[in-house]
Image (cartoon, rainbow, N blue to C red; front, side):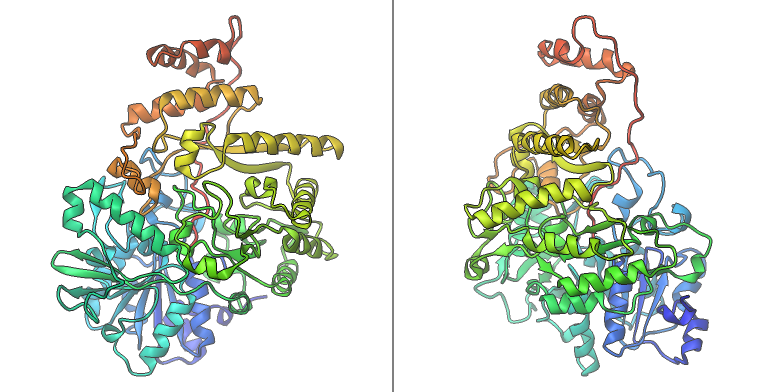
Length: 627
């Protein structure tokens, strides 16, 4: 049974139990403290602990009153770290309709009052007020995706870098193990944080004319924030450069002027090697919530505590997703041995019932995939390796992943291992020309459907219109239909009655009401009554968000329509629920208004009776936001 001292300390009492009279780094976290490799604050804390540093975590400090939670551990020797949470705080709190979500998945008992909105800004301002001489370093997805000018949906305005809004000293963006380890090493060696200007994956502010090394030939100078406020096309142009540099093996430095200063963004580190990634997951995580939460439920922990992450990165490049901007497109995979060691740790937990909830990652089936010729990858600027078609240089071999699944299922304690992460069926259906690789894809497909589905396999076609899917950077809906035929055939052959559950998005940039009407007809023909749906939520720094805000495709600068008003968004969303009796009248009126009365018969027939309604899934949470 885990002891209090098995966790990183969170209080003065816990420091005393360790005999500590100082702390090197204090992390203020917007999430509850769960000592698990899926929670960013715990990972960074454990990485720095391995380097011999004394690290403490203050989870969900009270930001009201006398700020006692911000004072209780005093000053750290090196810096305060801000880890606002595994999700952007506003995405975590509000739906696309700007309504409060049913619960905060990363707080005890799902409470909404455990963190402020924009904790990165709130926590930093408090710490700067209390300890103006101590550096504050930002991390996590909230700062990562707000490191340059970005559209904020909840304030409905273009905001500057979160450094200017918060007053922090530095951002360590993306996955933070390497950058925070190196930052601490240089601080311990006697460097001042303000003098550290060449560290990859960091963002800092300098006065105009005081950019380290001056403006170099290979720097990318973005339009200033002030120009972007006046010219939306300039913001669209910026976002293309930002995305391209996130997805390059060797990126360029980005510079953006704001309020008479310059935001300097250093390029990302190369992807972690397998040995480096293994070392992170070998750290002594208890895999448990801190004992202070005894008797309380942390919803996100319930979902992932029996899951195992097998790789990082995603080369899908979906325009509405934050993963590539945060983790990058290059896949960093763990070794089979490391994955099995973690699985054995999971099965030894007292509450383990025999089921691994997910052997996954940002995408379920990209394990060990990457460029066959690395030199080509090093020069590539494409944001996606699979759009508009799968790159000829991409190795799509599912063999190593099959090996992982079978090795896990051989363990006597494992009754079944499920795949809860999203499966890329375009990779499964891809004909590589290599019979061994194509055979492995067919074997993987059958293995997945036969052994790793908990009755319902969730996949994400996202839409049925190829025009909208192109803007989403998703494959043609014809591929989903082909995959469904394979799914149904294998179920029949194996005498199983499993379901395939598709995800869809309404109001994505480029999507019009007629597209949604046709989606309703097509999914009806496939005998779906949709459950896993969401209205497009503009989240900071994605291509889709900036397209939605600016009205331009960042890569072509061609105008793109987006439904923005609540009325227009609801007009699209209603087609998901065509089968609900209360929706029929409104849908029929809408179809007549847009000149598509011909679709009424396809949806309802001449004498069809409305079907019984199912509840709408308004609590659906956006997927795959990693720390």
